Length: 201
Image (cartoon, rainbow, N blue to C red; front, top):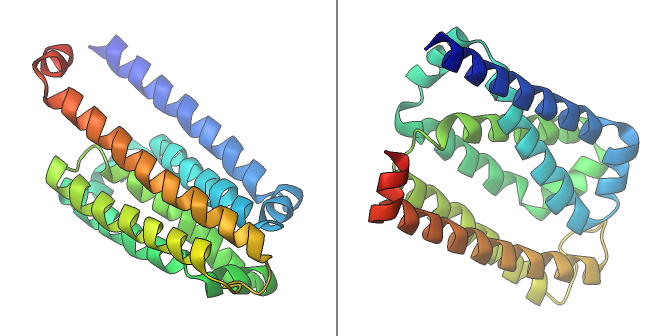
């Protein structure tokens, strides 16, 4: 039993180390400025990278800290709801513009993305299928709507980025929303199948 617990702790520590390395890489000025030079990279590289870093880094927290956090996160509801709300704000075009010219907004954006990733890491496995459906239904629908707005708008919604970059991002967001929904449905169907149940057993 101790060997299993030690192996699990070692895996968590390694994942936290990878997450910390990714976080530092994403925050270095050269990589941060390179990602923010394009609207597509801003959202699909920087946003996703920081979310992933937060998700991994949180695994390195001491067990007692995690237990205290989870007292406020029954079934992952608080973490997923907070993440959905934060992501809704972070996808507002004005936030992208302000983050490029105001370091206070930039710092808040970066911190919020890492915290969102941590909340997702703490909450996803605890959430049942109903909570996951509610979260994905809101976030993926919002992502698709924003993608359609970016794709179909005849004018720039962000002053800092070109129209064709915006439209490319819009198309990518639509496909990402569809892709995540499809993968989640397939995985959920597999887990619910007799074969999936026997694999977990």
